[in-house]
Image 1 (cartoon, one colour):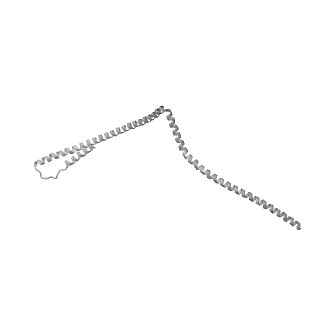
Image 2 (cartoon, rainbow, N blue to C red):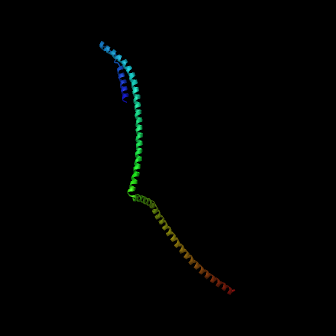
Length: 190
């Protein structure tokens, strides 16, 4: 970027030297300086072409350097990722080793931990089952109460029916008795 700016400043310097003030009557010494100055103008325009070529080559060299830097960055990034992968793998390995060492220090500790995990798991399963059991027990109790009530109602109706049948039976006996009496009285009168 600094080389690009340097090329731009060289171009600006060349543009500044090509601008001439309007011609005015000048003494002899100023005219000779102008000739020298004009000579340097042609030299300067010749130099600006060379500067342009140098700027282009410097710019391409700069881009090549940037590409090289980017390539190196990518390589470094890949190496870092690879190292991070190895570090993660080693961390997992260390964690496994730590668990094995802890299990060797107290063999029952691991078994106790496994049993505790199983207990926790069973407790998690029991909570919803317990609430389901309570709900079903309430439903059962309500159904049983309804059943018992309907059963009592049925017994009362059966008892009432039996009483009615008994009354109907007695009433039939009375009717039969009266019919017999009427039939006898009709036979006696005939």
